[in-house]
Structures are given as C-alpha cells and as structure tokens.
Length: 525
Image (cartoon, rainbow, N blue to C red; front, side):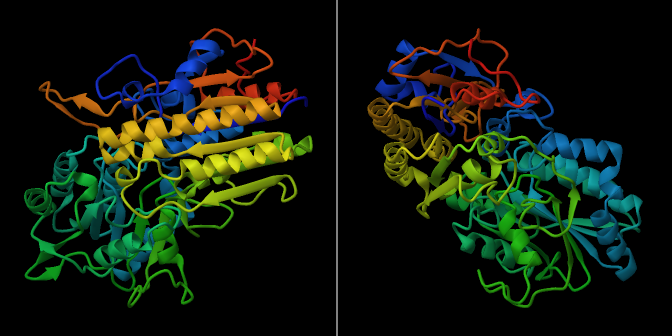
C-alpha cells in the first residue's frame, strides 16, 4: 500500500441537471465544482436494484447505501427481503409469527401492529401490514389494532390521509362477526416512537405512552386527528403530535397482558429503541414505562444481530459476508470511521454488514460526535466542523490506511423541508471538503467523495395538478463519485452501469489489494 485512502460520504447529496428544488446546484460549492472540473468522476446509482431493493422506483436510504458501500455486493434488502418472505409464505412459518399468533388465539387476545404507515419502502410498506392483517384473520385471530406512524418524509409531506383511508378500507372489508380490526393510535414519525441512535428517548416515551397505555389526546378517528392537527398547527405529517382513538372516552387499543405486538418496520435504526423498551427487563432505565403489560413482541427483522434486538423477529436478515473491512483486516490495514450520532451507525454497523462488533479491536478505530437534539434546520452546519477535525487528525497521525466519514447535513437538513437551511447544509459540507482536501495534499492521501443517496438535490416537486410542493423524501437521482489525488490521475471506466456496490473494489484497488471475487467490479480503468 503506497497511499492511504480517505472516503467521504456526503449524505443526501445527489446529482441531477434538474434545477427545481435542487439545493446542491443552488448552493455555492467551489470545492465540489473544482473536483468535477479537474478530477476523474462519475455518477453512480444509489437506489433501487443497485442497492438490493425491489425496483428502480424504490428510493435508496442510508442503511442499504452503507451496506452496499461497505460490502461491495448487492443483497436483497428491506422491502425486497420482506416481499420475498411474504410471497413465499416463509414469514408465517417463522417461529416468531407462530408464537405471536398462537398466543392471541390461545388467550383470545389482541394482535397489535406498530409501524410507519406509507409505501415509502424505506422503513416500511403498508402492503406488508395489509398482508399480515389478512393472514391474521385467516388464522382465526379475532382482534387486531394498528398503531400508525405518519410519514411525510419518504413520501409526499402531506399524504397521510391517503394511507389512512387505504388502511381503513382494508379493515372495513375484513371486519365481521369474527374479526375486529381498528386503528388505535398514531402520530408523526418525528414526534413519537421513531428516534434513532438513542438521541431523544423522550420521543420513544411519547410513543410508548400513546401506543401501549392509550394515553394522549383522543379522537374518534385517525382522519379526524390528522385534520384537526393540521388546522391547529399547520405542520406536515412527520410533525403531527400523538393521538389516541377512543370510544366513549376509552382508548380502543390499549395493550393488555396476554396481547401480541409486531413492529412492522423493516429498517433498523428507528426501530431499535422501541424494541429495547418492549424487550427490556426491570433494569430498563431510559424512561419510565409505567406498568408494563406482559406481551409477546417481535420485529419485522432483527434490527441488531450482535445485540439480539429484538429477541424475536419475523424475517431473517441478509447474511452479509466478505466486507471491505474484512479485506482490510486480512491484510493488516488499520482503518478509522467517524460521524456524528445521526450517521455514526452507518459508517460502523451498516458499513460492516449489520455488525455491531468490530472485526478487529486492534485495526478498527471509531469516533462519534454527539448530534444536537434539535431540528436540524436551526443549525444546518450540524457537526461537520467537528467531524472534519477528527478526519484531519486521523490523516495527520499516519496510522490509518483507510479513513471514512459521513457528513449527515444534506440528508438530515433536507428532511426538514427548509430550502434555505439545506442550501447552507450543502455549503457547510463543501467548506469541510476543502479542509479534508488540503490535509490529503499535505500528507499524501487519495480522497474519494461520494454519497449514499440523494435528498438535497430534489427539495421541490410538482404534484399531479402541476402544483409545486416541498419534497422531504430521498430522491431517485444518482450520486457523485470522485477520485482526487494530487500526485496522480486515476482514470475511471465509462459511466452508465455502476452503483454503490462498486465502491469497495475501487477502494481496494487504490490500496493495491485484490478485491474479493464475489464483489462488484472496480470502477478504475
């Protein structure tokens, strides 16, 4: 190995010639502009089949993106993994499904479903919920309750009522003398339940109190709750407060001893904390759970295999082997990974193939910068400066053959829907890239700049009526892939068919290592 490689992931920074809502183009980015003008670069796919999702209509996300970046291969992921299990019927043959369904039938108790109600295919898909509702009735489960988290992030910002109506229609078709299915509670995904990386346990507590105890503002229906909050607060779906569906002043879906609970999200980062609350014993101390009902609990997937969270799950995860880290460890190359809390798990756990533990304590160093607990449009620079400081220190140390980091700004600020803040977020990352470039020049490192998916590049969209609205979801656009080396020009193959899974082999080749045979090809000529 002649030169170390530094890989920067600009989270949520896609590339497109379209200008509508494109805050990457709108931003002042002299560093990126210089790279694209003078260095070898491509655009590569970061969504759909390139990252293991069912179709190219499926937007990428940070989890599957970092899996592909870190393992150099394409695995069935998320929605595709669950789709295959549902179509084959394997999900209903799983020990978890049999245990939870059997529990409800034996105790004449309720099966509760908790999850994100949309077809965004990032955290969940409403079709999975509908399939399980139909199977529950088929198997003789008499009572089902749905606790719905409203999206507006991976789908249009104010589309919640479309999904609520779709679910209500299905329940109406299923309901009869033998089956009682209802929506029981809900709220916006950024207000309750779906925190990640233990950044805001209060969010999880609000969700717990709402879903489990039926505590909160009461409404006759989910539609009434959404419409009322919109009139009162004027917020988009992800920010709608919690609500409880009640009849005669009593919640219709409070969880009781003997019930079963399924979290039907398949993505792990925002499912871990609720799973910890359900699986936790008396030592659980992240918030006061009150009287904890004795229920059977399972997740759609096991969200953390090393920590066994949750203990029970419906669909087995992809078994990711032969990652880039394993190749580096095999050759004794020391590596460094850092980000702030919001994306720390992505450059560690997801990068290493959904593995919490290091492959080598001696050869892997991680650093996490605590993220602010606030709306990111209020501080769009986030912790980019602190991440950059760490990366530069790692470069200067001379200890590492491979250094990787993630700047979350383009994604996390993009999700707020604030165009101005997102423009500043992209500019903040560009300023930091200039510092990393300078350190690579001074200490003889090769710099790779890429992204895991788009977001900041498509902040506006036209609806079917031609009306322009704010878009808070990821884009389907490709992402940049740039190789910068002050001392050499590393030519890339022709653009057209590469994706995130081609990055690992490219890194290996730059480090003068032979990639694993199972990897996608290198992009170097």
